[in-house]
Each structure stands twice: as structure tokens, then as C-alpha cells.
Image (cartoon, rainbow, N blue to C red; front, top):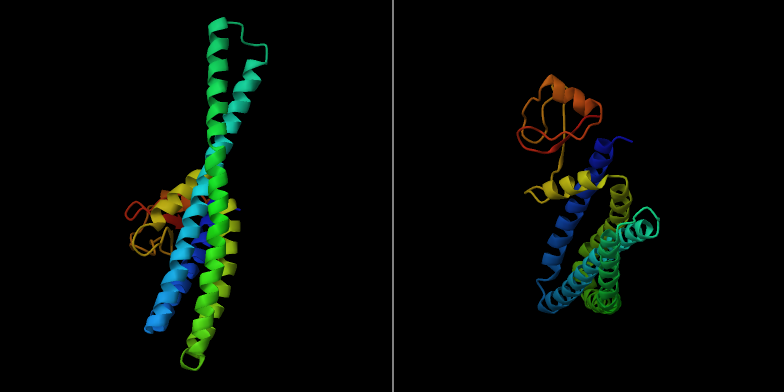
Length: 233
């Protein structure tokens, strides 16, 4: 699969997620017109945000630890390969390996802390969501339609999140970083399509023939005007 195809599929999924989140926010706004509901929604949102933050923290720590382990493995293999005979170079490599192992060890406590906080935050999300569900049920007659829609949207959200995670695995790290950077722009559009006239769907500029050919070949090519990643089916 071309990287541009994978990026376009991820953009489609993320755009759907954006739409779902926007509607969920609208629904929560309507539900929160009641003060009791407002407090319950805020408690649930706070718990979810805390959980997201700790999951991000754990992910960052795991990534850092993995990088250090790989670097330590490489250094250890060099150290015992028998190819290095210079005493100073051997000493430097031993010191580097020791430093890497120390840094890996130093990450153990933060990783454990993150795991414990995630466990606690997960329980908090469950508790606050249960409270919100209970309060919402008390106003079921008034908010029945909104509640039903919200449940359906949450189900769709979970499915799309799973799809997005699977799609992100298919994308190379540099391309994913570019995509995530572009997604932060207003509108959240990182991938723009080219129409039959080779015009960017976001800014409307017509790209050159050479750029059009790059896009056709599946090369990750930014629009020269708006910078979005160009895609053509």
C-alpha cells in the first residue's frame, strides 16, 4: 500500500472522529444545561483527561526506554565483538553502556508510577461515567433521544479509534510526524485530494505536471501552497 493511501485512509478516519467528537460535545452541552448533569459531565471529562495524560506519559516512557535498550544492545554487541582493541575506546564504550543502563533503570519508577496512575484513572473514569449514566437515566424522558444518540456515537467513536490505531501502524514515522503536525492546523485536514484538473481540494491551487506525477506514484508530496499531503486515487 502506498504511504499516501494509508495517510488518506487515516485522514478519513480522523475526520469522522472529529465529526463524532463535535456532535458529542454538542450533546454534552445540551445535557449539561442541567446543573447536576453539568457537574457529572465535568467530573467524567476530568477523569478521561487525566487518563489520556497518563497514557501519553506511559507511551512516551516506553518509547524512551525502548530506544535506550536498543542503543544499549548495540553498544554491548560492539563491546564484546572483539573488534575494538583500543583501551580508551573500550573504556568509553563501557562508560556509555553503564550510563545507558543507569538511564534505563531510572525509568523503572516513572513507568511503574504511570501504570498505577493509569489503573487509578481508569477506575475513576468508570466511576464518574457510572454516576453520569445514573443521573442521565433520571432525566431519561427529557433526554432520551440525546442519550441514545450519544451511546451510538460513543460506539462509533471506539470503532473508529481502533481503525485509526491500526492505520497508524502502516505509516512510516517521518510521514506520521508530518501528518500529526498538519492535523494541528485549523480544520484538522492533513491530506488533500487532487481532482481531475490536478487542483488541491484545500487551497485550490493547480499543481505542476511533475508534482502531479509524484502524487500519482504514491510519493508523499506536500502541496506547494498549503503544505497538505497530496493524494490522488
